[in-house]
Image (tube, rainbow, N blue to C red):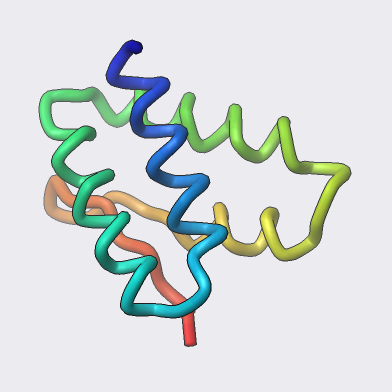
Length: 80
């Protein structure tokens, strides 16, 4: 499994997490996976998730839009 594939799985888990606590745990894993990846690689993973779920769910589109990279870390905002 490549680093990009692992990041995609982690971000999909974060999106599907039942609550903020579980989302935060998976985002920490995603941050670890993304270390050493370029911004372009991270963006490519996000775009792949957007493409795969574009027609499936408004929830997924909104969730992936909330994942951003700040100060070298991934952040997932907006989960209640």
